[in-house]
Amino acid sequence: MAIISSTPPPVIDPKVQLVTGWTQKINTKITELNTLLGAATNDFWNNPIYTPQVMAAAWGTNGADLFRISGLTAAYIAAVTGKPRLILPPGWTFVVNADGTVTLTPPVVAPPVTPPAT
Image 1: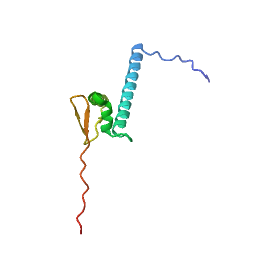
Image 2: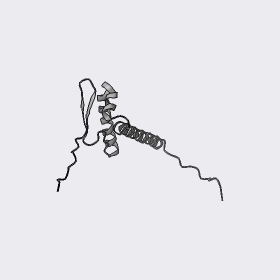
Image 3: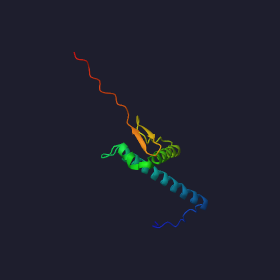
Image 4: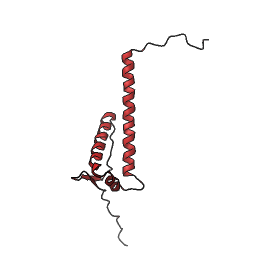
């Protein structure tokens, strides 16, 4: 019984090796971008200290770019992975102001219904 195999390793076509390497790198970068977008989106919308509007105000006149780039990135990730990526929670809307700042509007929540007195 041989401990070390005497069978030579298979010869890998250099073109296949090159393509495989690039495929792995591309997949890694897409995964990293998706993770980054998820973390940033979560920090923006679910921040335990600051409201989304306070976060938007902190971006100042770069707020419009933040929303534009985030939207394009989400669309790219969705196109590549086939899985939709939301950056704006349901019901929220935003307006890009002339100076590049962003104003957010939270979803309208219906007031609780009080049952009639019996």
